Length: 319
Image (tube, rainbow, N blue to C red):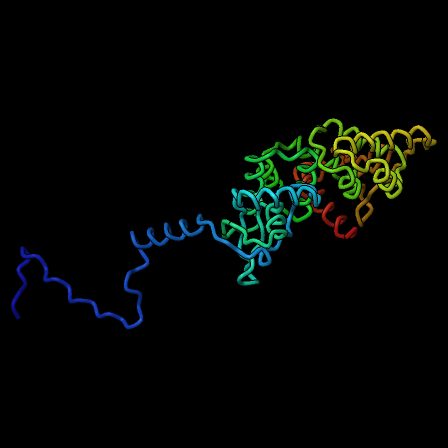
């Protein structure tokens, strides 16, 4: 057998046999990058979608808009067309249907006009959809404090991590804590009766929440009286009406004597764990770090996560 000359280049490889049905171009290298780019370009394109195929559920970043606001926007779209597209994402379990990410008021107006919605279609998971919704908020009319607070409360009740909520609303932890305090104190029915109140800032909403906690409020009667007295008023004026109504209730109410209830919490084996102190305005959990140093350190590190889990369980019992 002739020996191959080591100084000569090797013979060219035999041509590969084409496999029937195999893709002509491999899904690697530059071709793969081109396909990815084409997918991105497709996702950025604006499509026209029948509004009846778009669901508008999910966390809301704005309080419900009235029929007047929808009618006004519908008339503007009728005259000038839909200038700003909405964003939707495909529903995995319902092919051909979508969920709105942002643009709910535009979607409602287009339904009134029976016109197709110009929409950007993006394949997003829940976290990406929340972040996109929050980022879009920062680029348009800034939602009011109470709208942000209720949006944060919805995200927390849906199980979203705190860092996602902070990023979606572009706020810090102290501000989120203040929002949660207000959202816990005021029922959604009262907030909806007042409205977004763009002229009312955080401090006045916190004052309203404090006054509600200090007085025994019959929210059903308060909202009924508020609806009757605040007809035709702006949202900011309805807020003032609510403040005055709660002040009258507080002035006519007999304040209960402050209560102090001390309760010892022990483990299943009777080992002291914590001391629970219930007052008129606060509930305090006290752990003796000298008796239980390891448990106290663990509780300090995990209190936020555990309290959020307890809050979710409490929310489920209310639902």
